Length: 81
Image (cartoon, rainbow, N blue to C red; front, side, top):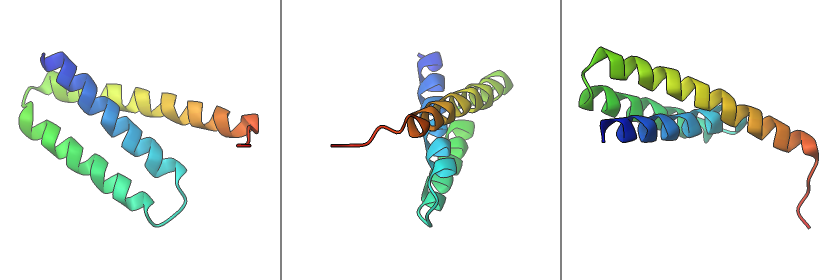
């Protein structure tokens, strides 16, 4: 069950960071604060060093994956009808 929480926290944090890096408006800072708050909640809940390291590693890997998917999607040139 702890691994499921680890993955869910990492997934949401990665999505928030991907939104922060791809939005070019003032609202991007809301996503940054959300990721920071989520990270603080995770570090308060799981005090083991291993879980903290895995949280950061998984969040960064998923962040790069989501950013790559977003970049490929925007370069495809698909427009809405």
